[in-house]
Image (cartoon, rainbow, N blue to C red; front, side):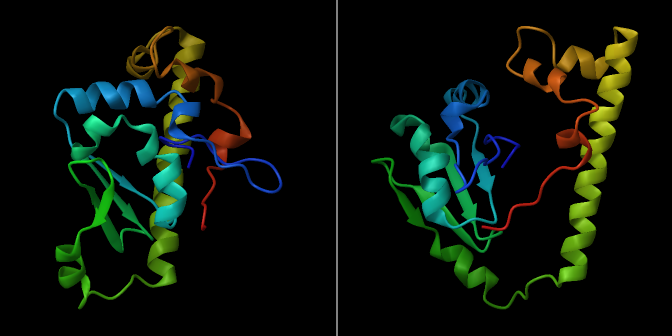
Length: 163
């Protein structure tokens, strides 16, 4: 949430679809080039089947995998575009223990620090009027929306979802 998919909002929570944000078109272009896309979420399949997979054209879903429940279950698309669980992953994971809360918290902090650094550096480059990150989010590009986030609470306090 907040990466490829627009962040949930409201009460009760509204979970926007991939098609509600800026990432669907670039993702479809990647899929048309033959790229394999793996979505990873802490959420259940039902949540991201609707939000993520169903937004992708059926004929392109063969290159889409969705790992749900923090990667515990992996789903692949069948030729008709529907999802089926990849049971080979189940066999690989049966002897793997989950990370403890301390490890997860440390990884979340690393990710948050990276996001804060990205937005801080992007803000500095916006002030200067040039820089590689600014080039990455050029006006008119599908990533131009990122120019709105430097120095905001969203950029400095990235959320962690746990549905």
